[in-house]
Image 1 (cartoon, helix red, strand yellow):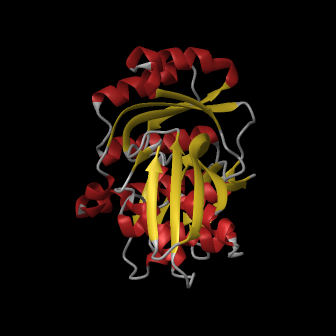
Image 2 (tube, helix red, strand yellow; image 1 turned 90 degrees about the horizontal axis):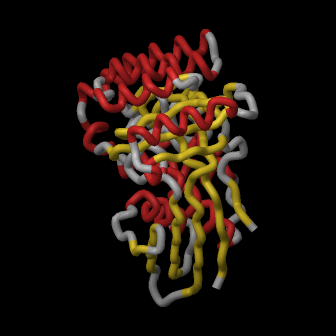
Length: 303
């Protein structure tokens, strides 16, 4: 039996611009911007020879046959292997699933990274990221998390798609900046991404947000353009808006909606962290609030 482990940070998008017209999955994706956080997905993979290929996925110690993005990534990777294998994937997920934290991309990326290592495939990191990105686009669980998760930090997705088509760069972020998130519920990502009107709004508003951000690529301006995007997109309800406004008044650099989730996130300097955290707890139970550091390394093998 061969084993390997990987960690992939969660990724939050403050805004996004859908690009899904291409017939090539490697070129589909989104432009976006947001932080990677040190809450994420730890993935352990076990693999051994078998009479026929079998794949099983577990999330937080429970069997997860519906983890289609991880399953697709593993199946695509196994196409490179000419022998039947039994693969067991165990995800430990520290962020809500289906609420805009890039958990599907993190799971698929971590599984592909760990399995490639366990099998000694010597695949380039960019190839593994592309496999995970294609799995996510194919399964409609996201469009632009994997590239950012490969890089880490506060990341601008400048061009859509998987490596080498996509292009990303980091915004400088002071070391004492933390990310606080509060989650009310998830949103139906796949359903929303199928709606033509929703995609068109994201293209127009996301393009405007990116243009404004590139004119002044700072954390504060990122939060400002994200808030404008959220208001225009039409998913920011009264409860999310009230939390974002209260958090901003408490001293956050800025606050907006997690895309795509019924959740609010804020960038906060360490000196204001406790005050901002208390505001989140006025709206949500402690289990629904995450206080995280920015993950500045990105996806990596462990051990």
